[in-house]
Image 1 (tube, rainbow, N blue to C red):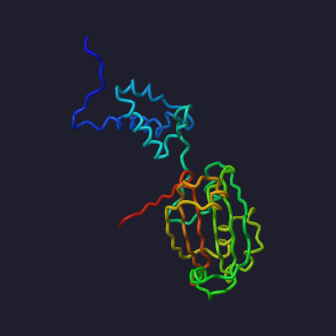
Image 2 (cartoon, rainbow, N blue to C red):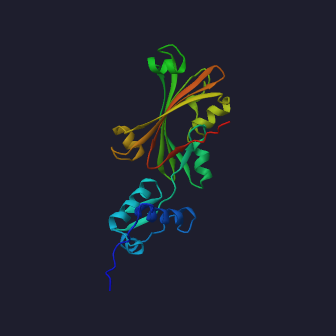
Image 3 (spheres, rainbow, N blue to C red):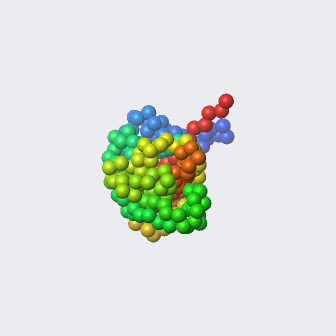
Length: 245
């Protein structure tokens, strides 16, 4: 009797790891395996597909990197909860997004102060250097887990009462948008590592990749403010859709 061996493939077959990967991904995406489901072990998948453990490991590693799986050392591999995501080309209220997902929104106001604008801030807000501006630092959370550290400078000419608002009851976005809808915005996104203060606020390690989203908004010809939002890469995703005419 011939000895059972690993499946042989030819040049037209997809890579073996991709077969394993697609099998798992299909069951996650069609909801056959719900969030939190423990998937078959590496040994079971190795036997099922007649491939090496290295092949299975690569498939699981890529699915984990893509956010579909969550691996717990010594406990197994589970279907991950989808990362929250926000439209890259649209300014939305984070509180609304969290509530729409059926989760609890909360925030902590870490700093609320008036400051003298340095050269960079003054230029961003189209003000003279040394002008008084409002500065806030707000930690926004989803189910008590920090998802955004928002550092915002606001032009008092647009929001003279910004300093006295209770931003645990209304978000900075909601308050400013109620004063006058934003008519223009510019945004940039960078990948960064958090400093020690940011690590402490977001409860993440020093090597946790983060998205740094910088925004500047206008209402008519008036610059409303400048915001720098830091979002842990493991907890958030940005996406955008572009339509071509």
